[in-house]
Length: 489
Image (cartoon, rainbow, N blue to C red; front, side, top):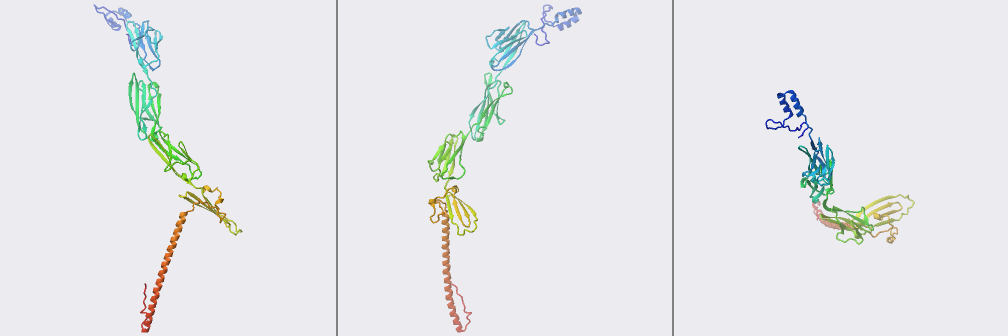
């Protein structure tokens, strides 16, 4: 049998020495003949035995193909002399006999049959077709060679299974699944370009494999919507990847914030409040209410918006917005404060002196709003030699005209608003202090007056006594200075 180019298959030569028959190799036989035979005889034997015959051989090529593709199985022939060529499948069933179909399998087709090459094709290859295909050449001895068919099963795009829901403050458990591949695919999790280690396992699925990769990661509210990728790597993909993109879904309780208008609200204005709600899942129902009261009749609710037209002070209060989902409840409140429209203007008539030049000295004073009366006053005085004007008005009422029905009959130039915010409490306190001060002064004055009168009477009596003593001392010839005494009460 010709196994290598340097090996020559020689026909068995039967030489009889007695009754024994054995093959004789040409080289050994020649060496023996050189010593035992003459040169002419040796040359004759060499010419007969050392001629190498041309041997026949067959070689097959192994092939690798993707599942569902077409495989070409080739058998190369050497020194083919018309001998029988047979091709068999891995179960040793004959497919073709000298180019003639032997097995009724339409997926197998004879593509080429020549003295040098025999080739068949197999379409729609599956993993069940995998194995060794025999190329056999029948001569004096049987020559055969096996062509190995390998089938690759590339993985499909993997899927992601949620094993445990991601709740704020907990952890998410996700599994990436490649249901079928051959050989087993390599799975890995990626986030922001970094690999997340996972627990990998695989299970046989016929001649293919199912691969699983599970990760467990802690999650917070900020992780909601984070991008994760599961990548499948396989030799059949030629350095490409099958990638499954996944958005992390983190559940958390809602948050509520009321968006309100800026500035001061006055009677007659409109109010629009918007309830901004976040949460996962997003709350479907938003509830508006007023603390310790019912919503005004003119209040209109449209989804997350509350609108009140023509505001008045009766609408003052705290408004509440509430939202709820399966993971919690949240609320926010807004305190409404409606201000009055106030205007107070005082006109001072001009002085008789009209010849003096007119000079103005504007003075502006702002009074902070009173918490009870909800009034903000601005006093503006323009002082001139001839005219003095004092204006006290609400900032919102600076453009309003004075009302003639509120004019003072004694001073036609003055217009007084009955809703002006005069500080009655401050006036009452000042008056009380003045009255108390006057009473205290009167009491002290009376007390001092009584005390001074009593002291005078006491000294007057003491003077009379001293006068008598002096007179008596003068009559008796004694020194009056020695008898002088003072008595104090």
